[in-house]
Image 1: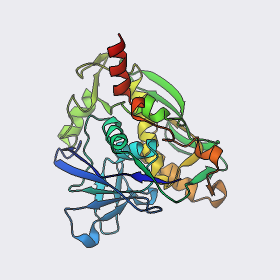
Image 2: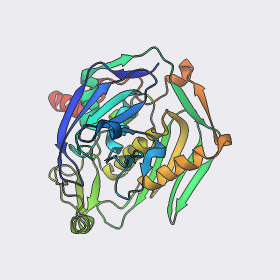
Image 3: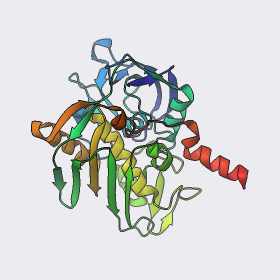
Image 4: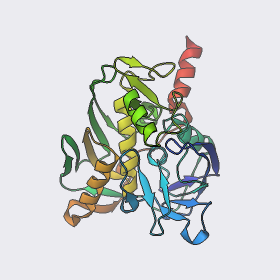
Length: 314
C-alpha cells in the first residue's frame, strides 16, 4: 500500500551551491498525489513543481526540476533518495528558496526525521514500473543501463585518479531496508581541485568540510575521515536511487552505472519512457511489494543508531 507521513517535519540549512539559508517542510499528502514541491517564495500560481523525470532540467552538478513557469528546485537527489528509501509515495514539500538544504551531505538526516515522525499507510495500491528489456545510454566512457529484474538493484562503478578514491565497485539490492542501512549516511564528495573550480564559477558556496567529503590526491581532508572505506561509490548509488525515484513509481529493474551522473540517469529514464515496449505499469502483489525499497525499515536501521549501539556495547 502507499504511504505518506503521519505529520509534517521541517528542515533548515543552506543550499550546497547557492549558500543561501533555506527552510523546508515535508508534509503529508493524499494517496496518488505523488511528490510535489511548492515554492513558498514565489506567486502561488507558479509555485508547484513536480518531482518527475520529465521536469528535470539540464544541470551537471545536481538534479534540478522546473515547472513551465521557470520556477525550479535544485539539489533534490538526496531528499528523493530518502523518500524512496523510506517508501514514502505521497508528500508535499514546501520550500522557501531554490535549493534543498544540504544538511550533512547525505540522506540520513532526512531518513531519521521521516522515521521519527512515522509513516501513515494509505488506502491505495502501490503500482510499480517493470522494465521489460535492456535500455542503455552512454556519454563517452560513462554508461547507465536498466535491465529486467524482480526488485530494484543498483550496480555502480567509479574510477578516479585520486588515490584516496581510486576504483570502487558495489552492488546492492534495495530490498529489506538496504538503502537505509548501507547507503543513507554516505556523503557527497568532490576533489579539492573541483571545489576551487566551482567556487570560481560561483558554485558550491554552501559547501564545507562538514557537509561534503573532500579529497586531495591520497588525502581525505574532511574531519573524521570516511564513514565507509568505499563511501564515494555508496554515495553515487544514493544519488542514483534519488534520480531513479523521479520515475514516479518504484522500478523493478537492475540499474548499472559506470561513471554515470545525474544527467545520464535522467537520459536513461527518458529513453525508457520513450519506448512503450520497454516497460509496463503493474500493481504490486504481496511478494513484489515486500521487495520494494523502504518496506520494513525502522529507526534501528539508521547507520548512526547502529554506531551508537556498537559503541555502547563495546
